[in-house]
Amino acid sequence: EDVQATPAPGMAPSKVLIVYLSRTNNTKAVAGMIHQAVGGTLVALEVESPYPANYQATVQQVARENETGFLPPLRTKIANMEQYDVVFVGFPTWGMQLPPPMKSFLKQYNLSGKTIVPFNTNAGYGVGSSFETVKALALNSSVVEGFSTRGGIERDGVLYVMEGNKKKQVKEAVNTWLKKINLLFSK
Ligand SMILES: Cc1cc2nc3c(=O)[nH]c(=O)nc-3n(C[C@H](O)[C@H](O)[C@H](O)COP(=O)(O)O)c2cc1C
Image (cartoon, rainbow, N blue to C red):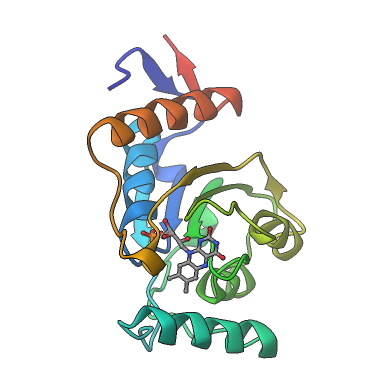
């Protein structure tokens, strides 16, 4: 843990929101690392009708939703969005795109004037169009450089990977990134 680091001045915990979508908990782990570093309110994004437990069924449903532009209704409600200046948005890559629930979130809330900070885990194929879509959906926000790391490969039965040495490496990379984008400072 980087005890020598401190959140940027002006980033009071009450002004920071960390919203994440996670199915197999890799993105949730990264959200937790960010939360440990900068504080704030940590919220898991949940949809009204959960995706199937079956991986292939989920891949197919997501592909259909992406084709039709369907925005799944969210169970999660954020109270007092006005209070936040910095909104972290975390998500896995799904079908090389931004997952539909995160599209719902970005469309549903007025994020204008806020700083939006994307982060991602994926199976090794990268962020796809997801970061670009965050920018497109948060046109009146300042979207800063995102963070991405390799997570699980559910297709191959590899679920949670944020343990041991991998966890340590990702934690260091997260803190380096937070410093680079000026949200964390060394004391
Ligand atoms: C429906 C679905 C689609 C996915 N599509 C991709 C993809 O296009 N590219 C990729 O690299 N990984 C893909 N993955 C793998 C996830 O991005 C990866 O396992 C990620 O770490 C999962 O994050 P989570 O544990 O927070 O749910 C997909 C996973 C799911 C469930």
